Structures are given as C-alpha cells and as structure tokens.
Image (tube, rainbow, N blue to C red; front, side):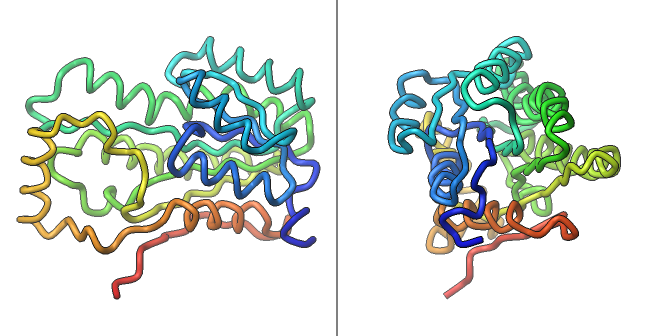
Length: 251
C-alpha cells in the first residue's frame, strides 16, 4: 500500500489527541487513510482538532481516568465508525513535585491518567478488536523510565509501569491477533509542560541542568513520534514492533 492508503479501512482511537503528540499522530494516521477518533478531555479543543481531519476525524470528549467516560467513548466510535482496530494510548500528564512532597491530587491525577487510563481503554477496546479479528495497541512511554528526572519521579514511575503492562499484555493477546507496540521517546516538543507553575518549573529546570538531564537544543518534533507509530502499525502481520526507542539526534 502507498502512504495515502496504508491504513485504509482501519479505525483508530488516539487518546490525548487535541494537541501535541496526540494531534500529530491523528494527522499522520488520517493522512494514511485511517478513520481517527480523537479522544481528549477538553470538548472545544478536541472538536477543533477533529475538524482538521474532515470526514476522517471524530471528536469524542473522553476522560480516560473515568471508566464510564471511556465506555461511552467506545460506544460513540462504534456508532460512527462501526468498531475499533487500533488504540494509541498517548494521554499523559506530569506534575512537578519531589516524590516526598507530592500532593494527593497530583499523585491521583498522574496514576489515574497515565496508568489507569490505558488500562480502562484496553479493557473497553480489546473486545472490539477481538470481534474484528485482531488489531494493534500502541503505548507511548518515555526515556525517563531509564533515567528518571527529579521532580517528575511519579510520572516516570507510571511510564515504567506502562512498559511492564505492555509486556504482559503482549503475551496475553498473542493468540487474538492483537499486537502490542511500545514507543519510548526522548524529549519532544509538546504541550506536556502546559500549566506548570513557573516558580516550581524553574526549580525543576535547575535540578535537571545540574544533573545533566536537560538539553533544550535536543528535542523531537511530535511528527517524528507520529511517524514511528505509523511505522509500527504498517508492519505486515508476521512482524511486530515490540519496543521502539526514538531519540533526538545530537547535532
């Protein structure tokens, strides 16, 4: 298949799709012929994002941390597109805080969205994939699991848990024709830092620079991550991209 029809006939759910990596992924997959259901909490933002894709885009306001919201989202996609073939678990948040000082709200938010969210989506969507004879699940991780950033330790821990989940899920779904791919990316240009308190962010940046974690000139455009997802999804049935490490090239 050519790039324009590589995903023709496939229905994709992308979480956290209203901006950043999720929006870039939605654009790339729609350009490859997929019908894309864009899931995100902000109704206005996700409507605007889906409008870019025309008839291939469907805006579905969903809070992945809420299983009832996820179930309603699946029903909406089923009504519009008939089923689901691909799930891209992209939605994630990072709250800046030393681990010993993290608030209950920030702890709950990160675990609820970054770890429980993918589980809610998997539970709701795997039955759809089984009915359609197979599918693909792509989980987005971060190279912070290998070298956790101070002040983002909870975020890194949720991504490490998602990687473990991916390994177990791959074995559990092997007989169903459902592939599980993990994309582990380095720092990317995204909306991840939106909403961070400037004073707290300044302290975190100091810690990152002191520890050699930060290189502002060495980041990935979100489109490169989206293209890696497309690569995983377009492998022939006998091949599976289990883990793909994507890092910015140092100039």
